Length: 178
Image 1: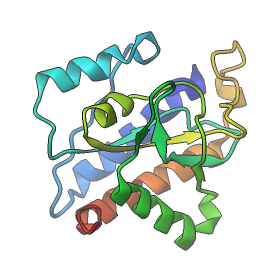
Image 2 (image 1 turned 45 degrees about the vertical axis):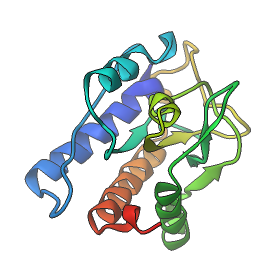
Image 3 (image 1 turned 120 degrees about the horizontal axis):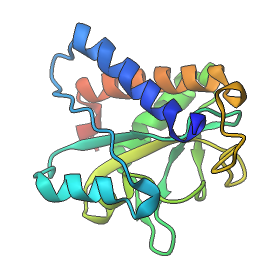
């Protein structure tokens, strides 16, 4: 689908291209786009089994095509819930306060299903997800209406800008301050 998750892939690819041409000073970036999310998070789980990611931070971008409020997750999981990384949540909170024009807000409850960061959190890792949704719903989620003409370019652009802000804050060392 266009929103789930071509929108997230587009944001990650653009951010990766920007970072390739202007590398961060203190942070190594690994771009990961997994498959089989809705089939049990199989791609993310396979990646985690194949690497030591103990010191890694994960920024997941999923279904940011709107039209809805761009949100950052505070918790992930359905039956069992895991808290997102407190330092990454603090960075997202800071971005939301400093950049109100981006419309970024916390997600107080689940939106859609689980995300690729959920297995990271379940293993005690550090991560957070950006997702566009309201009242627990992602627009056009798993419907034939998840098409390019139903995307909100402003929401996708805001997700890219929030991604830039979070990655820059990580590079400044803000994710290690809590």
